[in-house]
Image 1 (tube, rainbow, N blue to C red):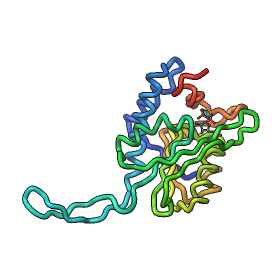
Image 2 (cartoon, protein in one colour):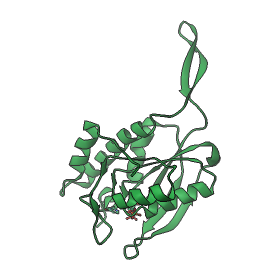
Image 3 (cartoon, protein in one colour):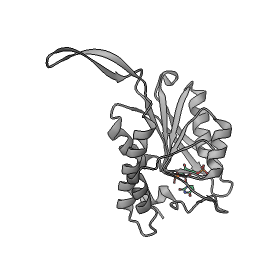
Image 4 (cartoon, rainbow, N blue to C red):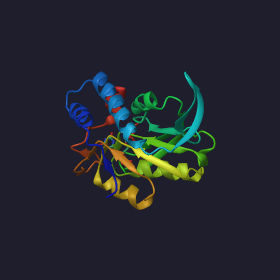
Length: 208
Ligand code: PRP
Ligand code: URA
């Protein structure tokens, strides 16, 4: 299974707080943003740099800046929106592409209801964000959409992943690296990650 588990103490501590059954909406939202920031730091570690000359305080100096077009962050609605602020704290000039998918609670298949991508996807890194990778259906559908639009460089950040979802994404899209805070045990009979976080979208939005 190909996935990077970010085992930084701050990541693991924040994840532990997120797993508490009585966590409030406010706290869940805050922790989700904080965790997204730390995971995005790891996922952007290998961005390519290029040397460039600038006028510094003492004259010309060669510095290094991120190469190429601005990356696009791709939150999967709804729950992915909860991670967006944290990622944008690190990459404030990122472009935002949005994918709306709802998982059918009976079939567990993702049902698309919205998509709006930025232009020039063939020249950008796309950073997909979604708190939960369960069966992997939503992630695979999002990667399929991005690739259909010409995107060739894709990474995905989730907070918690299930082995079932990692296997599916690895099998369908072996070129897409995955980053998470935890690889959990398994899915239950309703497709929920065990031990997981419960319904991340409901916890972020305060629904149910
Ligand atoms: C959740 C989650 C993922 C998806 C994961 O969203 O945020 O998008 O389920 O499940 P999968 O890996 O089995 O596809 P959900 O469809 O519940 O919608 P929401 O974000 O609106 O709560
Ligand atoms: N979606 C969630 O929000 N949680 C899960 O455990 C699985 C899918």
